[in-house]
Each structure stands twice: as C-alpha cells, then as structure tokens.
Length: 68
Image 1 (tube, rainbow, N blue to C red):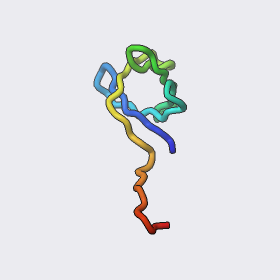
Image 2 (spheres, rainbow, N blue to C red):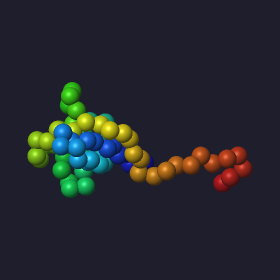
Image 3 (cartoon, one colour):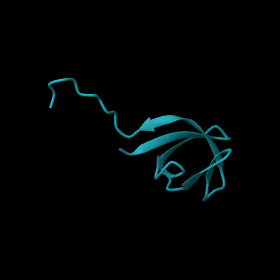
C-alpha cells in the first residue's frame, strides 16, 4: 500500500508527499523531499515544511468473519 503524508510549508501551503521510504518522497509537482531533524526539505526549491497528518492511498476495510 502506497503511503502519503501531508505537510504544511512555512507559507501555510499544503503539500502531499508520496513516500518512497520513511525519509524521502515526491510531491505532485515531482519535487523531491527529504526528512531532516527540524522537518522536511525540498531538494529542488530548498523550501521547508512540517508534518500535519497522515493520509493513505486506499481505505482498507477489515472484512468480517465469513466474508471472502
């Protein structure tokens, strides 16, 4: 399952990152982001952002007993 996080930049803009691992990912504009000690940094623009929550690519519903 693909994992995504939502970041907030210092300007208040929201950025959705598709994670490649726990320390790197790419946003919708195909900019590379890396995890640093004080937040996330965009390698392409040098912009900083901070985590604001987790989003997942698919909603996984648990199946009840007897469902296939």
